[in-house]
Image (cartoon, rainbow, N blue to C red; front, side, top):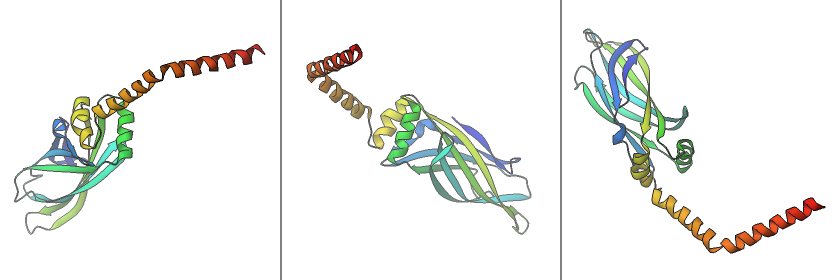
Length: 196
C-alpha cells in the first residue's frame, strides 16, 4: 500500500495519505483511485483549511488524466481521517499507451496530488497565506486486477483478445495451403532473381 507524508513547503508535516491499490476500480471510461487521508494539527496555535485537491495520473512521468476534488476541510472542526476518491477519465488512446508499456504485466502509474491550503491562526483566524503541497505516489496494479476487473470496465477483456487470436488462428488454419503455395512461389521468384 503506497503511503507518504503530507507536507507544507516540504518541511511542515500536516498528515499522511495512503492508497488502497487493490480497491482501484473502473466504470465506463473512468478509473477510480481511493485514498485515505489522516490529518493532524501542525502546532497548537495554528490550523488549516483545505479547499481542493488537484489530482494528476501519470504514465512514464507524463500526465494522462487530471481531476479536482473539492474538499472544504477545516482541521479545527472535522475528524482527522477522511476518505477521498480520485476520478480520472481515461480515453482509448491512453489505454493503448498503458497496454503498450505494461507488455502483459502489471500496470505502473504515478499519482500527483496538490493540496491547496489556507493556514489560519486560531486567535482571530487570520489567514497567514495560501500554500500548495505537491505529493507523489507510485501505484502498482497487478496484472490480474487490471485484466479481470479494470480492462473489462473500459470495454476490453482478455476474452476479446483471445477471440481475436482465435480468429487469426482460424484464418491461418483454413488458408494454410494457399499461404504455403504463395510462400513457395515467392521463394522461387527470389531464387530465380539471384541466379541471374
